[in-house]
Length: 417
Ligand SMILES: Cc1ncc(COP(=O)(O)O)c(C=O)c1O
Image 1: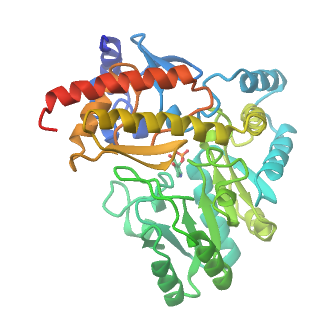
Image 2: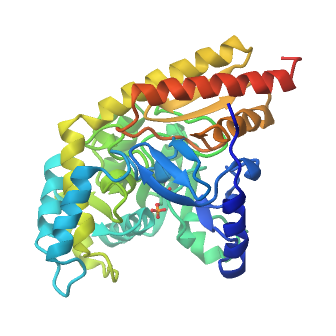
């Protein structure tokens, strides 16, 4: 099997470096740390369809990053794109919001179990920040409990002291706990009974560079009770997991009821919008906060959202993706074993994290991933991966073949294993 080359990608990146900070900034760029070695990766895409994207050199990839989550039905899904095209003819960004915004909110309220209302923005970070503002408005308190290693966007409060552009005041109201450590949360709450507005966490722990962890038994039920007892708003950041575990919300999946739920990535199959859903008791607080943006009422993403959610419900997308993820990851683990590699898989199958555990430095893992990427399977090294509904059995079979060949290459380089 021939490996890919990236001449046009590299040429374009050199042009980008001249006019864009870091060439490609943020999570899609080479400075982010998940694209190692960078020479194995495509940098710019040319087009996409279903489960694939093609780079500017014409290389095709089975894409297990799914645009970091938004590709949930398959790129350019025909039902979603048709709904968007129809809405485009009617209008997109207009002075009064389109009536489709109400339809979209109704769709979410009918779908997400805890939702009595919905509010729309553009990015995941818009709604995680709004969750904190709603909680502060509702409680008159200012502190938030967050989980170490959790990611909630790039607003200053989400970052760490010492990061460029962040000062003490930005993070002064954050209190940190370890994932799955209920006792830590209880202690903080009991020591600050009148200060804590919000507990904000992802439904399960999916940090970078380390294994994902599911909630331990009764964790969420105990957190729910504690928040209720102390008048703390329980906000769930379902930006990444949303609609990949359960169309009714990941709180429903884990058997509890959140007060606020933040959604984004899989909401519109790539059309840009985010949503926060809330309970009735927080509707006045949400109404009281001044929060809006130039494009937050754009109608085309609402059309995409309605089509995407309805299709996910019709095909039971979360179940489908869990099954595909299981088939894919079980196969990868078995193939790894044949070559003496211990591939550890964590998280949920539709959004799994993996690492070769034979060496703690993770360089073997990077070597294997790099061989896969150069043969057309797009994995990144230290972030969870994603399944989409368009992934076929043939794609899984091809992925297994490429994974096998890649393990063979790494084994040849490391005969000691
Ligand atoms: C769990 C989680 N929360 C929030 C965000 C921020 O979303 P956005 O990048 O759309 O602002 C992300 C993005 O990766 C995320 O994974």
